[in-house]
Amino acid sequence: MLRSPLRRPSIVGVAATVAQGEERVNDLAASPPTPRVPRFGCRTAVLPAVPDVWQACPVTDADQTEWLTVPDLVEMLGQTPSRIRRLIDDRHLLATRIDGVLKVPAVFLRDGAPMPELHGTAIVLADAGFSDEEALEWLLGEEESLGTSPVAALRAGRKAEVRRVAQALA
Image (cartoon, rainbow, N blue to C red; front, side):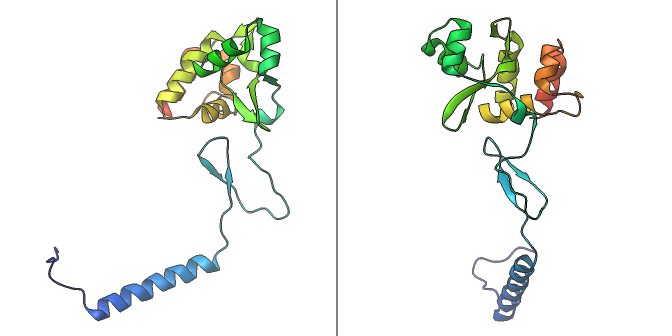
């Protein structure tokens, strides 16, 4: 039923709506909140309430990853720091700031160079709406449909399969 713009709701209707809103607020106040823990990017993970346990981020395989700084990469790749930052900007490598320092997972390198499969996969993830930090987290985390982490699948030569899964995330 369409309401006329000149017709005002009755006082009884407004009072009932206010009462329903107060009941909803009281219900929300009575139930314990579900903790939301920030991940690398702007997406959040909903974790069950666990007493006496607190973590800054969800535990993933990324926590056991060897991280390389820009100076480490300069030494390993024989490139200048500006060239390393350019590789990161162009998504040939993905990096995140850890304790304020820009770091790249060591698994993104093979034979002294960035994995060629990484660039196209990072572009697919960016097209799917992932930030660089979210893409990095997805690549390092376990993916059920692949049976392993996407970066491990890339290293095993399963580039097309990884990119199909990445496109399905959009």
